[in-house]
Amino acid sequence: MAYDGERADGQVLDQLETILRHVAEELTGWRTRALKAEADLKESGAKGGGGGTGGAKLDLEARGRVADLEQENKTLRQRVEAARLRVHDLLSRLTFLEEQARDSGGNGGGRAAGGSATGGSTGVGGGVP
Image 1 (cartoon, rainbow, N blue to C red):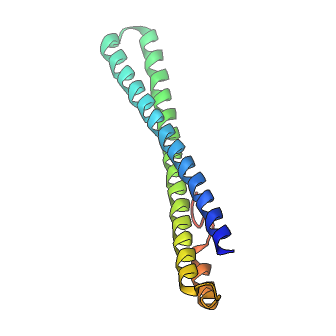
Image 2: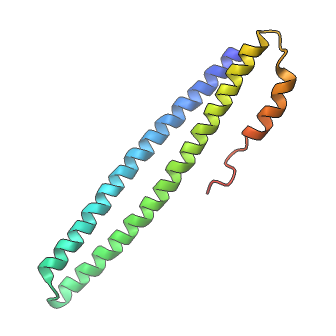
Image 3: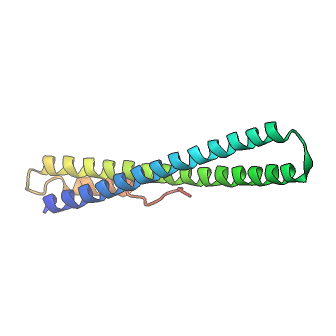
């Protein structure tokens, strides 16, 4: 039976690693877009130099876009960190299960000691926004 639990934890871990990889890729894309918007903003400032309301409107739009991208970047960083914490928790749980299976040797001897160790490490989402 420990085999089924280990396989299930392994599948969950694989899913979380995949999610984390996708979120990291998305974050990279947003960073790239934010840097491009910032470069465009600087370029439009250099070209416009202060001529007319069209340049001012573009400048305000670009600043707004940069602010939006920075907020999305912050949100994505929080999501990546939350995913990292979940992966870390799963790795800890998986390590514990492997040690418990190894120590019990199939006779169930490590069960009583394992109950208290599991209780502290399984807090779901503790403090993660």
